[in-house]
Image 1 (cartoon, helix red, strand yellow):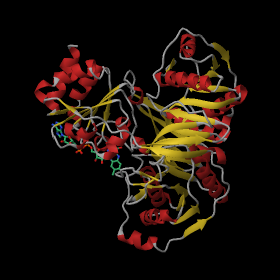
Image 2: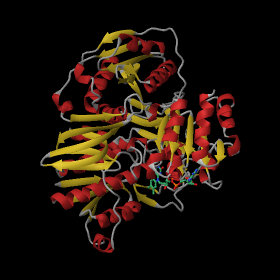
Image 3: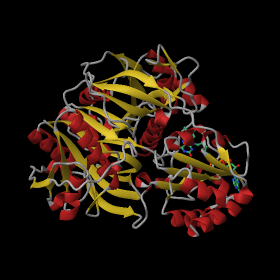
Image 4: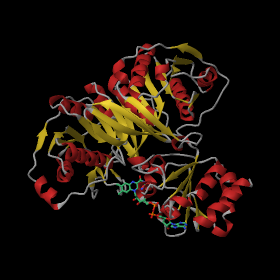
Length: 320
Length: 245
Ligand SMILES: Cc1cc2nc3c(=O)[nH]c(=O)nc-3n(C[C@H](O)[C@H](O)[C@H](O)COP(=O)(O)OP(=O)(O)OC[C@H]3O[C@@H](n4cnc5c(N)ncnc54)[C@H](O)[C@@H]3O)c2cc1C
């Protein structure tokens, strides 16, 4: 028996969220008296694979087939299922992402596994196997028993703070059987902002709403984000109006994030918006209306005009 | 084009969640139920495709009779008929089993649903249904066009999107901006009353997860207000007090 962690590569490097998943998986392994194995798909650098060891994996299975370089949920699910069977893994851990979520759903079907999404703590294994997960987009939590033999845990960002050690992992080549039916969906084009900090992975997020008045004013938001090395986000009307790309839209019907810092500029704080961001560690609200509901859910607030406040904050960050 | 749209009946997005029975149940008193917003996008696109290409749209809900108003609204928006599997939707695997059973009886070209339900946020039903039927599943889909027997799809990824092509049939988890939410008109509401809503009993009862109890998030402490004239103080506090930058 072992705990298997699905670790994702992004341009050859292990994603930060995957390092968190590996560390989490190693803790689950410790709780259940077994070891943690990471599975990595696609071509990756040797030092990146070794990193899995420093975050708690004792073994890395590397399926380096170039056909797996492109994130393909169906093929990935088949490979991870094969690895889980080979390793006798009853618990599979992954960090939520657009690829991992789709992969996990297929995997749950293949293994007839109980899947808990948005897990936010280590499981309680004192009797049975119980996890705490976020539901209603963070408005509540559910303590969920996973009763099937196979269990999949999709963890939310900031569930655990990983600690890096000097430990090493053995890296084994893994040669899964690939079948054509898993490649039935053809990718014809990919458009991805490069170099930017990806929103779901970001520790710091600067977000703006309709209070910015128009897309031409986003410079002050981007400047602050850049100074902080933060990702940018926006409210739903902003992406509906095409002021910002859709993948920046956070909230109940958008991306759900849990960064260390969420700064909301010119956003009123509608319940649907809050739902997507309320598990952020620290929330800052800048709004010219002292009655804006967002202040009730914030840790720090400034009643003021974003057009004056944001440039001053940027300057203060630059002078740190 | 034969389209199946799977919908959930969920508490309105403005609902404040409260608990009862010693925190083992969600309190449904006074809660307004709506069609899952993501499912609503799926349904709207399905109705648009039907108007464009002809065919039928069937709505499917796994739920108890309290979901009927939501199903009738889907019919009012433009679905032709509806099926309700009469069971409490206890977990994703169980719901997927019901959908797969209905899909096996009636071969659909497209099985659409929301990317996730906004109550339990599992986001797994489309993938499990895809596995059970041996069909590709794609989520979250932001654009869908049909060209003969091929679907052209835009899927959201972190920091952007990818364009995909796949042959029908397919299972898709949908989100905005695949279509604009449709609002039922008077004619739709009238005709929905007489459209068929078939109630069937569930098959199988595999549940792999079970919720023991619930908890509400702790309230945040008081908000520390900083005068706009001293905005720079915020940055200092974020470094020295909150220690996040
Ligand atoms: C089913 C459903 C799902 C939804 N899902 C989401 C979701 O996922 N995410 C989401 O964000 N919304 C969602 N919404 C919409 C939500 O209800 C709000 O309408 C939306 O969040 C408001 O966006 P906003 O705060 O940018 O705009 P507004 O509500 O218009 O607020 C603008 C704010 O800017 C302030 N402001 C204006 N000028 C300035 C200035 N110069 N300086 C400082 N402050 C200023 C104003 O005081 C105001 O508070 C959903 C709605 C529904 C019905």
